[in-house]
Image 1 (cartoon, rainbow, N blue to C red):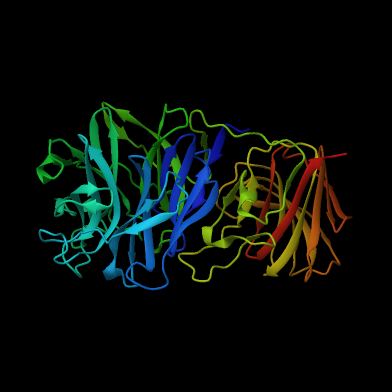
Image 2: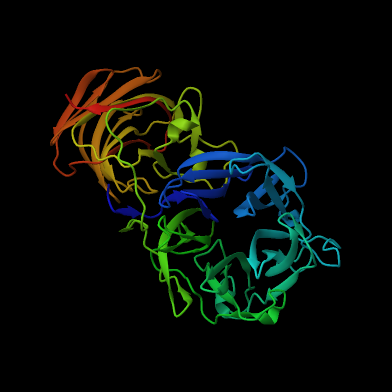
Length: 510
């Protein structure tokens, strides 16, 4: 197994991850219609998805399910999430409480929490997102981003004490201004509004920091600021001291960075930050997830600069990936068949059905969707000489669909992997063989085929040393030599095409 991995590790925004036992549990919005938990034994792969809560079809929390935050408090799991009736101005904070000790639920809904003004916190209740909780001196508090008054669209950071993990105990308190410094303004210049959201608590060596996202999430200006609890009372704004400079900001390669979280490596020796970054510089919310280590210097967090997409960095300390042994088989007709595989692509373009796993599946109601050459890769494979086969059903589209092999360091992106690819191209009815170096594609060979692509077809690859052969429905159609990659894993990949895969078989070459 390679001791490195490549960012970004997944598609998504507002990533939340906790370490529970020997697993990492990622929490994300499921297409704005629910909450999904992804369970993994590693920090560098989200693992297997499970939708644990789906919003009702109508009502005050039926739409716009944003930025869920998973926390484990006193033996139970809680998910804090913002939701509305479809109008952003009606966003409020809700708490999902696990009915037992299983993070996969079921969950009970509480709320909305009282995030407004007045003694009861509801006179009136006011717009709120990005809630999370923390303990200080044994007392539980909630922090979130909220409007100062109904309809204002001005976001500040607020705090309140809690009676329990699902109920606030007092009125909210604004922690700080959102425009103390020019870098907190949406366009980093006077005359544009300040914005503060995504509060995350980082506690280390007796110190409590509140890391917040600021400027504009839809622009490259997004970044992280820091408040430190220097006083004794978290409910007193004077107890929070704002750092004069951003603690994490964009580079030329990685921009629009923010709204993440902090977690330890598998062996507990390292701190890691997860965050999202924009896919392009123009204003939108197309984002992907990164993970990188950070340290503390003189007790203060030092996040460094965001890692560039496509660059290799060392895995978290203590992270291990079990190397699968041949033969390997997967029907992909049940979500459990995804165990041991990692998905690299927009979450809304992955679906598991009774007929097989679908890549490039267009979502019913797309949310910030974008194509990336969606792929599903077997974890830890280091195969040299082998035969791999898969059954392919073209659902819609006319571009490549097929097998990745001898592949390493997969990431989110069309050619974001190192290795070979053999695929069927419906538009021209050919089989193509090529290789990618992590950022670009180079064709090795192509041959026409006569198979009826309106029906399922079997694609097979056999590799022995530098010799590669590709077959369709059991007949060899292409043979070539290439010595670039000697070993690696196998996977499935599509390019701008909706395809159903089933019946993966990988065995040692005869």
